[in-house]
Length: 346
Ligand SMILES: NC(=O)C1=CN([C@@H]2O[C@H](COP(=O)(O)OP(=O)(O)OC[C@H]3O[C@@H](n4cnc5c(N)ncnc54)[C@H](O)[C@@H]3O)[C@@H](O)[C@H]2O)C=CC1
Ligand SMILES: NCC(=O)COP(=O)(O)O
Image: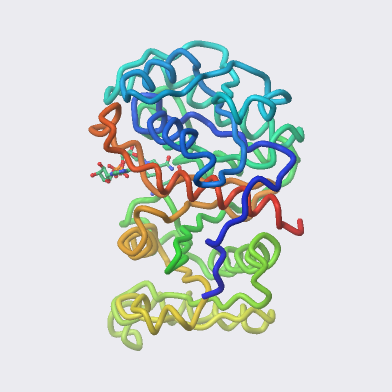
């Protein structure tokens, strides 16, 4: 597998815009910890769309010495070496580690919107999102299953075009993509279409070339059913949906192969045959990716007109404010976004 995890840092003239995520989760913990490691980890500069007082309270709880500087996106870069730059939101957050408060939901959403707007407007070179807790946002009227779908909606708002967002989980040993994303397992077989597989694969092929400099990406396409359907004996979707998609991809000049039985496509020698595995549903893709790389895999949204990365983990409420949250995946997300911004040819 070509190594896109190797990073360069500090080469971008613009900082990354970090949305604070759920303030009661471990987002603040990993953001603060990452800033303290900015030199040893050679992190690209970043600023946080969040609440300076809440971040300062979390830093105190964690006994982290993090000076915090409220600033604008334009001035954030000049503070990064000496303080964590924070661009304030319209309203303050309440600081309650481990307890998601409905009153914080509007700020969580605003932070994502503002990080995207800053990037589109040229103040930031990419968006890095800290984890959100989806349920409190749904309760507050958030209509999108997760960041991935919301970011496509924001891209449409800014550019007037429709984008197909593709969730890539990229770790040092494995990259996977779920073709269907945040839907119930019972809806997968009725939602999956040949067109979805083809469109996801085309967007993947394009972005692996443009953003990750993989000249001829090799796409392994999983089957949906056990044993990729066992010639139709265990479900017909592999014959009727996945196989025709693979044929069309090959006809379009994309280096795709499959459908592969999902249970045998993730061992080491199988992984050596492809650059990315396209899987038919969320857990088929995310279980192997997180099992192999939970600490350092990165969630990247492909198919968008801007860069977005995120740690692969969620809000881990029980760890918020305890000092036990590992910042590794967030650090990997910062590095990958910085590297993508420095090297993208889009
Ligand atoms: N990008 C995002 O915004 C994501 C958000 N989520 C959301 O997070 C919430 C919690 O989801 P879960 O499935 O519990 O996943 P989770 O990733 O928050 O936690 C899973 C397990 O890993 C541990 N863990 C997670 N991050 C860690 C870290 N940095 N260091 C050490 N241990 C860590 C947790 O303590 C827990 O045992 C949900 O609301 C989910 O929707 C989940 C994944 C990604
Ligand atoms: N399981 C991954 C996840 O839920 C992250 O989704 P998103 O918020 O990045 O769309």
